[in-house]
Image 1 (cartoon, rainbow, N blue to C red):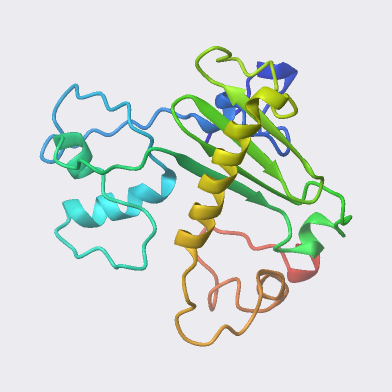
Image 2: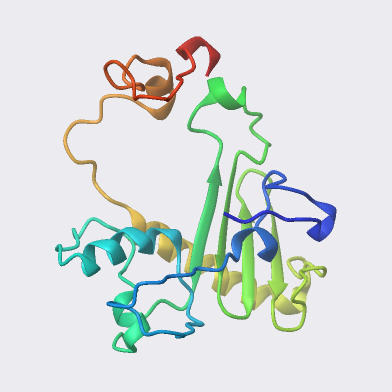
Length: 206
């Protein structure tokens, strides 16, 4: 996925950011049997849409527990109710052993919701945020989060983010036996005997 490549004087992933140079990535598909040649889609799509798309093209029923949606109908112009915002999050809380102990005031969890015009970044542990007008400020240089005249936009974007959280809640299938941190420390990570050509780090190094 995206790298900054110098945008905002940042390289690579460069920590906890959601600038366009990192999260807006070209989504190129070549599949003549399923997608019209040369079609350009300006709708907001997410990485979670890839799996449902592959299942749809293969003629397999898409499980209702999947959060993404197939892009086939979108490319054909047959989906009238496509999403009007995009969601992303960074969560460093899943494995304290990998990322180190987290300060309660750190950026260990950050979420983003954006529409075609507005991008809102939420830092729940810090009590701060970012709001950018992507039409007037495409390079995201002017953070409008603290401007009183944009308080209504901030409230609207927060509500969108809350709605995403609520829609994305899914029950666990079966019994939840271990957390991500426990998984990394367990013997379950590499399959029995490992995979040919793959080197696994011992649990104590993860």
